[in-house]
Amino acid sequence: MTIASVEPEAPTTSRTRRIDPTLLVLPAALVLMVAVFAILSTTFFTVDNLFVILRQSAVLGVAAIGGTMILIAGRLDISQGAIIGASGIVCVALMQAGLPAAIAMLGAVLLGALLGLGNGLLTEGLRIPGFIATLATALVIRGAALFFTGGQSIAAPTTSGFDLLAWVGVGSIGPIPVSVLLVLIAYLVAQFVMRKTAWGMRTYAIGSSARASRTAGIRVRRQAIQIFVVAGALSAVAGVLLAGRLGSGAPSNGTGAEFDIFAAVVLGGTSLFGGRGSVMRSLLGIVFLAVLSNGLVILNVSSYVQGIATGVVLIIALGIDRWRARDDD
Image 1 (cartoon, one colour):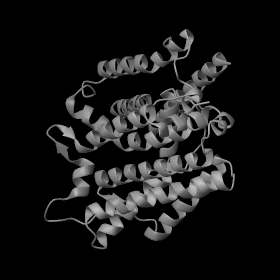
Image 2 (cartoon, rainbow, N blue to C red; image 1 turned 90 degrees about the vertical axis):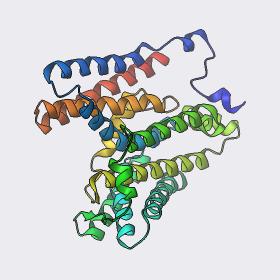
Image 3 (tube, rainbow, N blue to C red; image 1 turned 45 degrees about the vertical axis):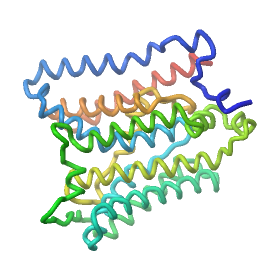
Image 4 (cartoon, helix red, strand yellow; image 1 turned 180 degrees about the vertical axis):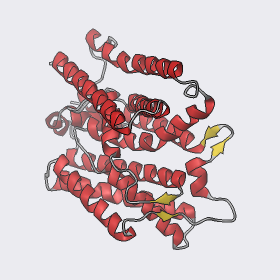
C-alpha cells in the first residue's frame, strides 16, 4: 500500500470526479451577501472598505492554514487564539528589550512552534484528547500572558527609521497591503505542500485512516506532532501581524479567534472527521466571515447579533459537513 492509496481525495472513480454541489454553496452565498450589503450601504462596496476586509482577513487567514491542516489530520486545536495573543506580546517585548524587529518577530514565531510542539506531545505522546489538551494549554498561555503584562497592553517601541513591524501590519506595496500579500504567498505555499508533497499526502492519510497509514509505513504520531508545530508557528505569524496592525501586544488579542478559525475552516468544506479539506477553501471561509462582520458593522448591527450570525453560519456549515459524511457512507 502506498501513501497515495490512502489519500482520501484521489480521483479513483467517476463518482469522486464529480463536483460536490455543497462546495458551490459558499461561493454563491458570498456573492449574494456582497450584493445585499452593497445595496443596503453605499460605503460597503468601495476600494477603501475592500482593503479593510482584506486586512481583517489576513490575521485569521494565516492561522486558518494551520487550523485546516490540524482538522484534515483528524485532530483538534483550540489554543490558536491564545498563541496569537502570546506571540504578539513576545514580539513587542523583545523589541522593547532592544532586539531588531526581524529577530523579535522570528522569536515570536519560534515561541509559537514550541507551544505547538507542546500540544503535539500532549495529544500524541500522552494520548490526551486534543480538545482537553489544547484547552489546558490555552488556559496556561492566557494566564502566562496576563501575568507577564499585568493584564495591560504593551506598546511597540517607535523608531525614527524604517519600522518593520508596522510595515508588515499596516504597510502597503503599491495599493496592496503587505499583510495580504504575505497571506496569499502563505496559501500558495500551503496548497502546494498539501497537494504536491509527501508531507501533505501523509497529513490527509492519517486523517483518513490512522490504521491504513501505519500499514503504509507512515509514522502517525510524528506526523501529527509536526502538524501541531506548523499550526503553532502559523498562529504566531498571525499574532505578529495583529501586533503590527495594532501597534501593541495584549493578552486579550486573539480572544475567541480559535472559534472563528474553526468556523471558517469547516465553512470552507474541511471535514470534522479528518481526511478531507483544502486550505484554499478555508481562505474563502475566512473572507466570508470577514465580509459578514464588516457588513454588519457598517449597517450598525449590534455586536450581539453579529455573534448570533456567526453561530448560525457555523451550525449550517456543520450540518453540511455531517450531510456530506453521511452521503459518503
